[in-house]
Amino acid sequence: MCRLTSTPLTERLYPGLLLVVTVALYGFLSTAAAHVGVHEEIETLSRLIEQDPGNPELYVSRGKAYRLHRRWDSAIKEFSKALDIEPDNVAATIGLGRTYLDKGNPSRALTILDKTLAQEPGNIRALILRAQANMKTGKPLKAAADYSSAIEKFSGKRKPLPDYYLDRARAYAAAGEPYLDRALQGLDEGITVLGNIRTLELYAVELEIMRGNSDSALERLDSILARATRKEFLLLQRGDILTAADRTTEAIQNYLAAKTAIENLPSQRRHTRPVMQLQADLNDRLISLGSPGDHD
Image (cartoon, rainbow, N blue to C red; front, side, top):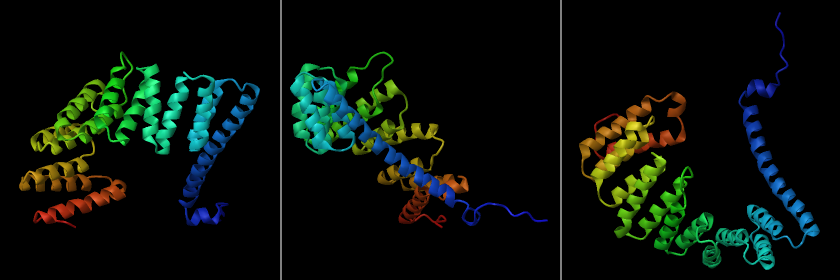
């Protein structure tokens, strides 16, 4: 005798639908919860400020909450109030500088962060924020100097974030060709300190290409390839470097090797959008180079 199940019709007809809806709903609720959480924090801080209006740290905390809420003007008002109470409050000046930077006024942020660093020259957060402001106001060498100062403050087991080395290299690169060597030296320093960080290694490859040094770019890329479990995207990049160096036969070999790497992927990975786009890019390159290989 056949037993009827109580599985809902939608779940039997569309077994993946429930999961999709659940994930979407979870994402919505998580965002909403974060929104409500910040709002509740602001309300709590407001009550505490009513009880203790002379406490600058409460205004700093409410300023941070407003900044997270992207209410820039309210955040600026809170940090400014904290500074009215305690003019040397470093947390307030950093918060104020960061808010002006987020708001899109890096010049004003620089003025405030200069004040912070006059009080605390070794404040890493202020140095990083000022570096970002210097970049946005067209002062890449000053930005690089601030990143270097921040990096130098770390010692022992505390390590700088990879982004500090990466952003410093970008600052040097933005300063022009004469500074590409410094950019590369800084990346190599970061790799020595932090290990083989892929973002640092790949930007080093990019800088070698900018210097017109294809052999060094290939040497760095080969080091990454030797350790990589997924090679198809790196092989495309290697082929591009070889193409630019007029080493067409080698370039074709790398593009074909990338296609083989894709063919060896599990089906679900082969049919992702990035891999399908990679396949199309490889076919375009092979056709442009006149390769007789299969481009389907």
